[in-house]
Image (cartoon, rainbow, N blue to C red; front, side, top):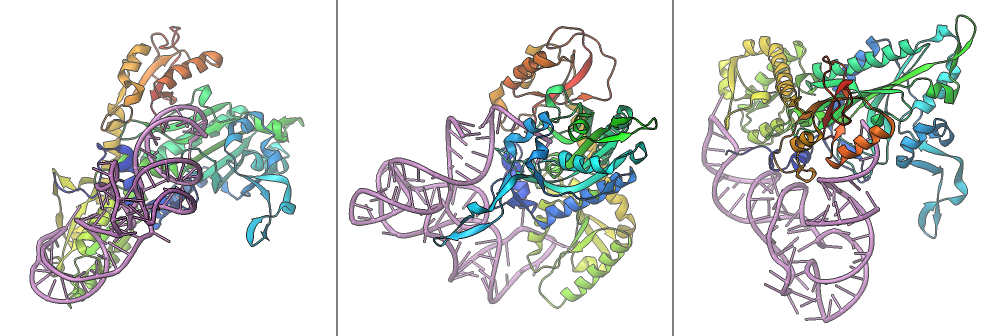
Length: 510
RNA sequence: CGGAGCGUAGCGCAGCCUGGUAGCGCACUUGCUUCGGGAGCAAGGGGUCGGAGGUUCGAAUCCUCUCGCUCCGACCA
């Protein structure tokens, strides 16, 4: 086998491969603060693209951006019972506001204790609800549609870059409505925005559906998610949308006067996606040569590498590249000329690892012949051989956008085929389910691909559901969601033997 | 926080069992030669061996504690 751009393959160890791609793809690194990450310029560029694309969609659906404080009074969190219980175990708390020098050592000043501790927001329902309570008086103020881009902190036991970090970045939408129908429509509308965004921009196919009761957001009546399939067969919850009923409205007195003059509680929603999406993109599109970025989120869609030789001819080569850059920019393409003096081959492989969709290499003969030689990151190799293409410069420029579109489409098609081809739907007994996923301990053996199972169930809740969750847990499985697109149900529940009500997806998950 | 494994140069590793004061590959610097492509030769730079104690004439190596990372469990976007 020929040399790969990464030192480790997916087959050898998927978790190690993931880390290698985050590091060698210049996406992020661990920080001096446990569980927090430093997002490097290339990784941040991807997040900026995600923000730009998603923000436009959030605004198109009538929402306005604003910003609420990082700190939330502890008493706010305490207002909604389920909410407290859900988040209490992972909150960072600020208790003091001053340091002092004691015997030459910097210590927390015991006299500077805050009267009321502040929570570093794990999510903002309560502090935004407090504002909603003041902002909403009349049915004429509704619906109130707010979004914010922010960082949040959840003190996780175990962290993984992008997938689960103590601090992460996200957008959180918060809305208030006059009635259940309107709030539910909003919840599902934003879920659909996420689905379209994930598939259309990230080229990451997902299944949208409702979470079972035991997986709901603390304080929600209904939680919906989009679930993506990673290359190791595990599911990744890539976005969530919650119908919160009137729980927060009642806890925080968010009321309005309706047309009949009666004081009524609002129905609220919240929805969010986070930097976790970047982890999803990596595990959806990455290969053994590194990351492959969908053109729509690549900070640079085309990278031009001049084959510099530190000779006088370099000037001509650079002029040719600059002209090509100008033409591509004019065509609306994000392009970079990598004119660093690093060895050309080294530069090429760095861009392969980073996942630039198109890598152009220009040598003296290309320049004098008016040609462009390039590689597609989505189809880098034929077997072990690197595939490069040559076009005239004009051909290349005029076809560049179409090429990027084709790459975007191909990445999606590849991932879609993997998702569609790896959901088994012929499992009707718990034993068969256990057999399909194998013993719990074999989970991380190299190269063992397990997809998802779609099974019929009777949608029990309470103790019955908890018992099912326990049985699944022994197999390291969870119910991901009940897809919104349901076929006519037939047969009996795999768990209870009762008549089935719907299909749910079962998988190992991140 | 429980179980397992691992921390030696930027990255990947050897050395540890059988203590004698640090090495390999890639990357980096310089020179020469190469040059349609992950080049060759030569010369270099970089590590108080995660940290703190202890045993010892002497510790990367043995002992204790501690911190961090990875995987598994619990928790979760």
